[in-house]
Amino acid sequence: MKKGKLLIIIVALALLLLPNFFAGRAGEAEALGEILPLWSCIPFLGMLLSIALFPLFRPHWWEKNLFNVAILWSLVFLIPFAAALGPGLAGFEFYEIVLLDYLPFIVLLWGLFAVAGGIVLKGSLSGSPKVNLILLLVGTLLASWVGTTGASMLMIRPVLRANAWREKKAHVIVFFIFLVSNIGGCLTPIGDPPLFLGFLRNVPFFWTMRLAPMLLLNAAILLVVFFILDKKLYKKEIAAGRKPAVEGPKEPLRVEGLHNLVFLAMIVGAVILSGILGTLDSLKDPATGEIIGIPFAYGISIPINNVIQMAIIVVAGLLSVRTTKKELHEQNHFTWGPIKEVACLFIGIFITMIPALAILHARGADLGLSEPWQFFWVTGALSSFLDNAPTYLVFMTTASSLPTAEGLTTLIGTIAPQILLAVSAGAVFMGANTYIGNAPNFMVRSIAEENEVKMPSFFGYMGWAVRFLIPVFIIDTIVFFVLLQ
Image (cartoon, rainbow, N blue to C red; front, top):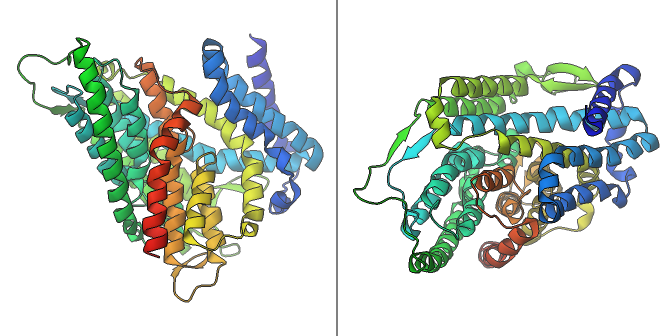
């Protein structure tokens, strides 16, 4: 057995045994953000730099060792943390983020990935600027109703198949991430996890439809820019003698594997059901007001609504894999590689971002935010690198502390509508700024690279975001948070 794998097994066993030796430390976790220094975020920074630099300088080594790197940076945080503040508190933070945040996150991604892999769009798709524009538009419109992850997994393979004949196609995937994996998911709580957290805190289901004008403006600008860019590159492809793969009589579009839509509906329904169950008083502990759950350790319980949600998603995914013909998976070039890569990397991201989130939660109110445009940019900037769901919740809580004559009443307080819109837009839209800003970004990149598309590096992708997204967000600021204030 390799030494690296042996180390991982030893550490995993040690962490599993922690609850048996140390008492719960949930109370101390509440003040964690006040205790931790800023340099405790160094492992998180190391994790981000590893994702950014290793694929550039040691790509083959990185492919084989990315999980080991994620575990290494996790230990660089956990070991000093346990030594300084006690293994009990370290164990509490580890299990809380793994069981309550990472596990539901990766189960949902796995389910959507498995189900979408069995749906195949067939027919004549030539990868022309017009066809690409339509595919991006359809994906953007779907995102709010099946989630950005669901829409991304459904649409990325038809996009890749349509453009397989083209040499220059990375720009198509980049704009796909901008629109389908992020901006399109702003209209409902199903669209993106931050909005779902708002829904659980009494933000009405259709309240986020107020972001429709921003969605229309952003999508219009980006789609027009994309069409101009794609048309220019398309002409170069044709001039170089490359032609669309589809020739002769056009084959009508058709969808195979439609039975997987039932499983997709199960997953979306499971997410909605989880939210509804979380609001029922009959499922809450009368003493604490928190939803009952399966007890684990350190006072941590896995909420029963999360358990039900994950169970339904796992059943839907397994049924999809079992009932989908092998040929359909082959036609989709379906493998488990991308979801494995996401699972390995994001465990490291979730663990190492513990101090960053704790500090932000404790000191977020000290940032002096008062105007909607400030909430838009700060929420967005942090959502580009941290998990956008807890970042949204931190600034939603900060917004509830501001005085307001009229506002939206939520479980955490009354919030001025324009500020809540700014927090929502920042969390959803600016998740597109980096590969790790939103989980579908990384999955789409992995699937594209698996299909031999040379995607921009971590910093290269950020360069695309600076050129094309930041100007759009500046326009959003001027139009919606200054002129229409």
